[in-house]
Image (cartoon, rainbow, N blue to C red):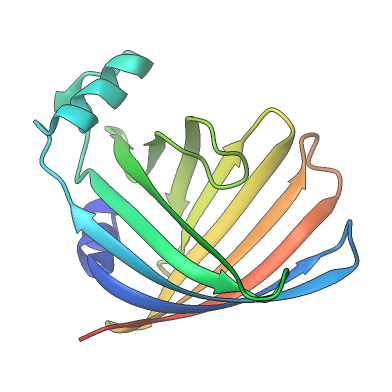
Length: 174
C-alpha cells in the first residue's frame, strides 16, 4: 500500500467509537464522533498556503485532503467538540511507502505539525508526529473497505512515557 491508495480508501464519512485511557489523570473516556475525509486538489489555496509555510514544492505532494470531525465525549457530561485540518502528504521519492505529512492543525497539540509516516509490511499506516510537549503515534489499518481501526498514543516529548492511549473503530457511512 502507498499513501495514495490509503487516502483513496479513507475518503468518505466515518462513524467513530473511541475509548481513551488518560493515564496522567487516571481517567477513562468514551468518544463518539463523525469524521469526514474529503479529497482536495493540489492547487487548492489552503493546500498551496500550507506548502508555502513549510517551503514545500506543491509538485512534490500527493493526494491532499481535509479531515473534519464533530463528536461527543463523556468526560464532562456529554461535552461536544468539532474541528478541521488540512493534511498534505509528501511521499519519499525513493520509498513510496514512507514520507512526511503536513498538517495545519496537529493531533496532540492544535498547532501546525509535520509527521513522518510509513506503511508496515501488513499495510498499517504508521504516523509519528513530534510536538513541543508531546509525541503522537498513530496506527490505522483496514479490516475491510468500510471498517478500519486506529490506535493512538500520546507520549511525553522525550518518548519515555505514555500519557494517553486510545483505540478507535471506525465504520464508513454508506
